[in-house]
Structure formats: structure tokens, C-alpha cells
Amino acid sequence: MELQILVFSSIILIPFFLYCFDLYRLRRMPPGPTGLPIIGNLLDIGPKPHESLAKLSKKHGPLMTIRLGSITSVVASTPEAAREILQHNDTSCSGRVVPDAVTALSIHDAAVIWISTNDVWKKIRKALGMYLTHKQKLDSLRDLRLNVVDCMIEFLRGSEKKKEYVDIGKLAFAVALNMMSSTCLSQNVASYDSDDIGGFKTAVKKVMEVDGKFNIADIFPVLKPLDPQNIRREAKVAYDWLDKVITGFVKERLNQRELKRPRFGDMLDSLLDYSQDNEAEFKLKHIRALLMDLFIGGTETSSNTTEWAMTELLLNPNMFLKVREEVCTAVGEDGKIQEAKILELPYLQAVIKETMRLHLAVPLLIPHRVEAHEVKLGDYHVPKNTQILINAWAISRDPKYWDKPLMFKPERFLGSEVDYKGQHFEFIPFGAGRRICPGLPLAQRVVSLMVASFVYHFDWKLPHDKEEMDMNDVFGLTLLRATPLLATPISIE
Image (cartoon, rainbow, N blue to C red; front, side, top):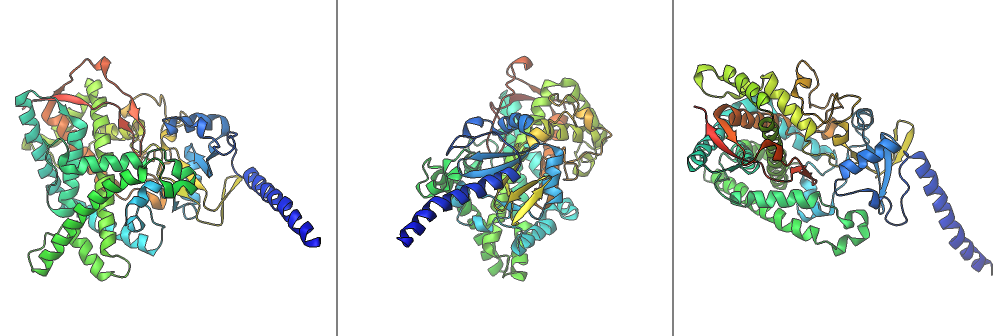
């Protein structure tokens, strides 16, 4: 009898105590909208989550708790809230939440973007700093990037003769891809007149689509084995294709080394050397994963920013002419755009910054996760493993920091010290803290070169009146234009 009473009491009391504990825990977390049983706040999130969360934050505060299915998240929507997470509690909040789609990549546990900030992560970041993003290294490889731009200009002149419209976003993607492949592999991998750009565009677009897609398996982890939306299966096809191609490049380079053939001196050679010196922590799978991260992250975001920048310049002819005048002055009689000079052009850089602010490539920074036992954010206590979302889109439109935030106004950056290097939390398109995007220095050069070249060498004719320009975007891991930017190049030389 006593045993039966004990069992019965346990059945009643244990759930009660768990409920009380959960209630206590939630009361210590930031406020948020009341959700429904099981699904939580799913009905509060529309097709553009960054916009939905921005609206909710106006009611519930800069730090807000939302529950999507069984996943509890804290959302930061102001510069102050972002600073609290990415600066004051950077170490405790530097974990990652890995989407189920990403697990389709067999080497995702070696990817710097997803692994914990452990010793291996530090080795990879060190390699990136030495062989890709260090100023001296970037300067040494600038001729490769200029050669890619020269090929782009020749393609545009051919399009001009044919009187063809150019898909500027697709072209920018191919240019960014070739700049990355030239830097890493000493060869171009994309043809500008190919519909599929050698398969890379299809694979990268698919990865960006599925990684940013709403996945019920992410909010109800018990469903992950079933993959109910086939998202992981779709991701696997794209990831496998990319991994196969990149593995082929690595194997080919290893074979050339065995045959004692001349070195290329590119990033792949440097990474292989680095791997030999740090074999225990930096293996070939880390090289493959790193190259894949660079090809995915370094092409889509740069081409998106370039496409949006050109959209705004074509809608604002006076701004277009200001950029051209500035670039022409820097180029002088030489007639050749120099990378080092255009990085110092204030109005061009202001246009790029304003594009990144108004048309943020990644509206919701890749989710962080609390790694400490518990972290105190302001007056709130957030438990371990809680997902943290930084709504960079809302932050970049905060009227407290930005005058007329919905207006494209490059002049706001002239004479301003605000930049995107993670120190000014009202403007964090690349993130901040230890998880800041490592490709930032290269992205600045790639986008600057493309925009300057488009403006310096050509006028552009739209297929419609400016008033008909579709300015809508589509949410994914990146924020894409809803319709491609098409224009016909007209040489001014």
C-alpha cells in the first residue's frame, strides 16, 4: 500500500514540480507574446520573420522571449540588446544552433561557422586570418581579382553589342565566385554566359534556400529522423555536389605536390602547409569545410549586396553620377581601377554601407546559443542551450540611431565613424564579437570592385520605367531581390 501511495504521489507531484520550475524559469526570462499550447508563437511569425519579430519587439521589448514549438528563443532587436549579447556576454553566448538541413553535410562538424569556439575553431580562424583576410595577403592577391573584373567587362561589352539585358545579380554571383576561386584555387570556375554557372549557382542557391527555410524538424526535434518536409534530403544533394567538386580540387593539388610540380602560392597551398604543421587539429576535412563555407558565404552575400547597390544607384541617377565622378578622379588618366584607391573613396563606401544597412544580406544573424550554465542579460536570466536571435534588420532601422531609416541616404555615412567591423552595434551586417564574419575584409573589396566597375565603364538602360522597379525581397538565409535586376550596359568609353 505504501509503495502504491509513493508511486501515485510521484506521478502527481513530479509533473507539478517540473511545471513550477518551468514557470519560475520563464518568469526570469525576458517578456514575450503568449503562445498557444504545443506550437507556441508560430502563428505570430509570418513569411518574413525579421519583420514579424521587429513588430513584436515594439510591444514586448528589446529583449524578447518567443517559443516556436519546443524551442525557446531570446530575440535582440536594438543595438543595446545586441551589445549585451555580442560584447558583454560574448563568450557565454558564442554557441551555435545547427539547423537540421546543415546536418546533411557530412563534414558540418568541421565547419567554422557551426562548431563551438574551441581550439579547433581557433586554429581555423587563425588560418583564415593568415591566408585570406590579412591585409598583406589580400593585397598580394588583388591582381587576381582585377583579372576577373577585366573578364566581366569584356562580357558586358559583348552583351552591349548584342543589345542584351544582363541579369546583374547573376553576373555579380559569377564574378564573386571567380574572385573566390581565383584566390583559393588559382582558377576561375564560372562562365559568365552559362545559365547555371557550372552548377555552383544552383547548388549554392539551394543551400541558402533550405538552410533558411522554415523547418518543422527544427522546432520539434523529435521529428528530425522523419525529415517531414524533405529539407534535409534536398540539402544533401546540394552539399554532396559541392563537397565532391571541392574534394576534387584538393585531391588534384595533393597529386601535383606528390609529383613535385610548381606551387601556386594560393590559399589552398597555404592551407595544406598549415594542415601539415597542425595535423592533429586541422585536417583535410577542415580544409574542405572551410572552402565550402567560403564559396557559399563569400558569393551569395556579396552578389546580393552588389545587386541591391546597383538597384539603388539606377533609381537615383544623381548618386550614380557622384560615384562615377569619384571613381573617375581616382582612376585618372591611367584608365585602370585600382583596388587600394577605391577602398578609400568616401562616397562609394558610403553607398555600400547604406546598401548593407537598408538591404541587409542576412537579416537575422546566424542563431547563437547560450553555452554557459546560465547567462544574465540585463535584468533577465537565460538558461543554457537557449537559442539567441539577433534581428540585425530591426537594428539597422532603429529610428533612435537612424534619421529617416527607410530612406536610401548614403550621405548619412559621410564624415561618420560608424562602420561594419563590429564596434558600432547599430550597424552589424557582419555580426560582432568572436562570431563576426571572418570574410568581411574580402567582401568589402569584392563588392567595391564590382560596383565601381559597373559604374565607371557603363551607363545602364532599364527595361522599364524606374517607377516600375520591384523593390520587394524574399526571406531566406539571405534577403534576396524578389525579381532579378535586368539592365542593358552602354559603354561610355
